[in-house]
Length: 396
Image 1: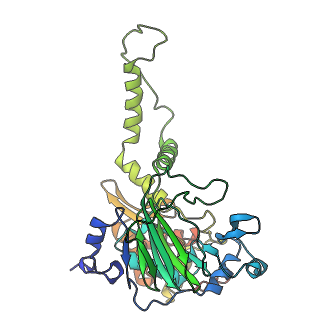
Image 2: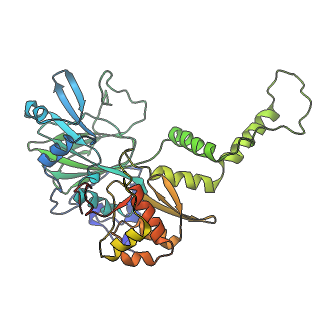
Image 3: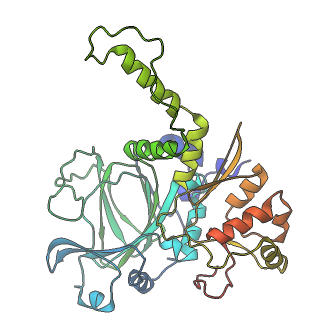
């Protein structure tokens, strides 16, 4: 029996299939005890420390800030910032904590019934009593896992993009928020709330300091997708592929853009765009692009294949670097491993092995083409040995 056919505590004893059929992208689900006896993988002071690091995306939301209501400031912060804050009614939000804290990254494995490339990052928020970011809607799916303390969540139903928001502040807070019946809960540590895109929600920290872990997903909008795919295609197409009108009828009116001309242009666009292989190649690249441009750092001194093989044969494991993104696809044109926005042709066995985030060992070199591709991925910064001098000490 596939482990996805078993009822999951994480999903309130639903099977993954039931959850995906009835809740995913459709309606919220409150799961009491989704992670029983849950202990937060990060302390509040560690989270504040991360928010002081350059390169970490962090925001501070103060309901009554020094410069006005709903003040948003962006990190990196310093100790003085935290020292001046009041005892309640503020929130610290830190994005992509999974890139820095391996035990937070490990939470993503709990959601392996969803494609890994669909996950975006793990955000963690800390709030003293009263802390919140206002009632709002998000355009992506999110699992809100209570890590410590208690947060009261209220839901306000599914809204459209046109729902009025408060103007003049750096947050998209809804002007009007009406709590739906039976949608008002206090979450304890280990409880989790799933929200599909577009559902109004409002979460307020209760009488104790509260940390909430948000597992968020990525879904390109149609406008982003069309622009990005057109750019990708444009790089592949020859300049000689142009509008042509061989065999057209004589012009009836010299100034008219007639139906036949519009149809010829439409066919040129459709024949160019409607190419499943090209769509797949673009899609794999776009869904594995790192969250931050400087996330994946190439080695200053590239390794040779021989050096890589020797290091693996010494018994040293090779890890997927924090924040690196892998996916693979096989179709009639072959197999592609997508890594951090690039595509690599390889065998399906090698693609599956490298997209599996468990550490790599010497025996993995037996797969056809492994040494060459693994060396390339180490040099681009997507895979790495954790003992290297000068690397971050985020060892697993």
